[in-house]
Image (cartoon, rainbow, N blue to C red; front, side, top):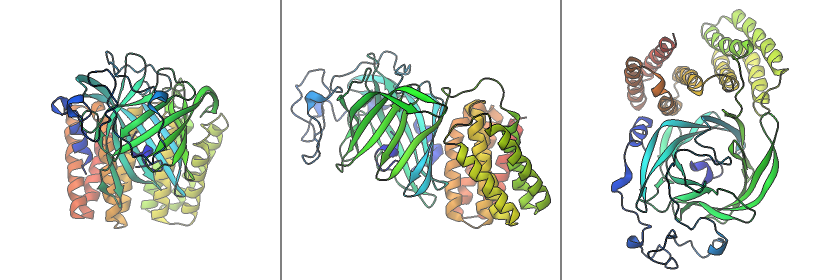
Length: 464
């Protein structure tokens, strides 16, 4: 699921091209796992004409389970595939998910967003409408991976993974699309969650050796988990085997889906999900004060109005102390506290660039907290603006690589918000994003800054 499962928690085409590709129907693609396409890479143990899923051959040195232990071998049918009712993988019910952790000793963050469009994928003679979920991962504050994942629920309640379109980044550029696969074209669809998992059940969440492979064994189905806002009963504990023979621990929670992954010293854990963690009523005023205050400090630091910046930081800290007393999602709380402390230090040190960066970080955490109270699309609009602000800061530092990453990030967030904008704003946003892409490619920092500022103006106008 995304690249985070094929590599230690984290895994080209531009974001706009990726979005366009979602409309492509896979009906004309040959299925290499069909009986007619059987080859030396397809197991001959499966009877031709049966309703068993043909299985790719896995190298003999990988300690996979026997077929008798597996629960994912029968061909599923899909009558209502986008209505996912499975509580342990509720992808159609989870609009936005935030996961936090660390990879290689650096802070790691992922945002998972259910997109409004679907994609038709043909597999074993069935044309299946799949949900499209966008996965974006950030390592040490910069984009590391982005993927579009395709899911569908079978009639028996099991959820199936139909592939992913994935891109890995280094230095703000796509370095590989390794790990991309589509069911019916590259191999079989894979069961991501059984309908009623039982201890010792085995299933493959990715089943394309050489591209992406994971085999899961259920260890427990009654774990009580420490959730964002309290204990969660009925958690599933699993062990996941990879092609290199290594395993990692995985937890799934009812109402949340994937909840915790750990392996090789790296950790990724669920911090917040909506609507599961949604709160009733309007956002508390303190969260609005934190976000608007961070933007004010960003502007004050740019103009070196340190008195205004210092005064605003004091108000932000007071607002946080008031809000924090009422209870905060446990993984976000220390991040917000640390961000405010870093902001106060940067303002005290009169470091313009450092204060602006700290202001962006504080604004981001305040938006994460607002996700409980506001529609995810509104939060993504504000994130879109923050990344445009980040680009102007990176341009002033002359960091072309960071700008490249900012442009990709802006493009991916754009995919989340397009359906919330009217036609005029869509055209304006597209125009400025295209100018950003051109400026980044040309390493024209001035043009990139101008386009980012116009993009911020467009977003502000769309919210009026």
